[in-house]
Length: 450
Image (cartoon, rainbow, N blue to C red):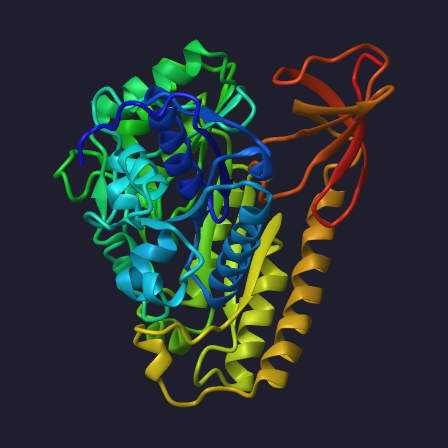
């Protein structure tokens, strides 16, 4: 699509759903709309056009997306002229979605982001556009981007799509095969972020550890981290998220521990611990291999943070499989966990597998796993009481109270650090604090000089 001119004065609100990768897409949409003359507003009810940037990874995300779209459509009675569905929902369901959602005035998949202004203009003309494009997208030279998060933290999407082919996962047919963004483009994005005051750079992808494989890049993610660490320097944070545990090599581990900018944070979607279940998931891991990986990480740095993801109730999961998972979760003592029941997602191989567990049993196992994971995380958090940690200040609720994060906490998904200080602290800056208390995901403390 060609860039659309003449949208001056059109007010657009963007509602963001889903993961940080989706947020990056939304930020480019906003940048492109502003370049076309649109005014981007926060309140949907104050907009001429509402764009809902959707997620469709699992069933609850689809339900949330449709509910949000219908709520936005209700705003037409208050003066909203058009509602657009963007993101992963149209990428997954395409024209079928347009037929089902008559209330929605246009559809825009991630692969067609460059034409967002033209889609808005067409919707305002009553044409009901459906722009799907190719799967996945990267910013092209000259694309503007507006950071929708606080200026001190910026997400950099280093790759899109996935080529692993896990049997339960919808990403390959939503986002396509794995595509790495070239190093030069990423360096430019990070330089731009630093120039606007960013103190934390988060590298994101469906699997950051596979970065560069499709490009034949020597060193892959290790080489990228070396370049970025040198650019960022030792006084800012470089956080790596979404590391596939089967691709966490010795070289990559060494880089994450040795490079001064990289925080010791390991975001590992283990998914399970039973080798039999993992094989059915299309993954090569095992409890023994994953335990060895955790031991290696904690041997190098006992304080290193681990965020772990697990799926419970996968088809054919026996009581023995579940107890193996429970034991692993208790032993690992992950700092943060994301736990999901199995969803039989349409189009995946896992949806066709026999041995589906009754929903009440899946819920029971999920509750037991949650209790185990939270107890382990609480034990882990308590080890920091009395210790000194560096805190990135983010919010000031009032008085001497502040909210921030430590290296242990990725933005928007993990815990927080609740801080007391006697002086005024600036959001986006680092302070040293003494930990005085701990809960499952959160720490409490006071500024060291207070």
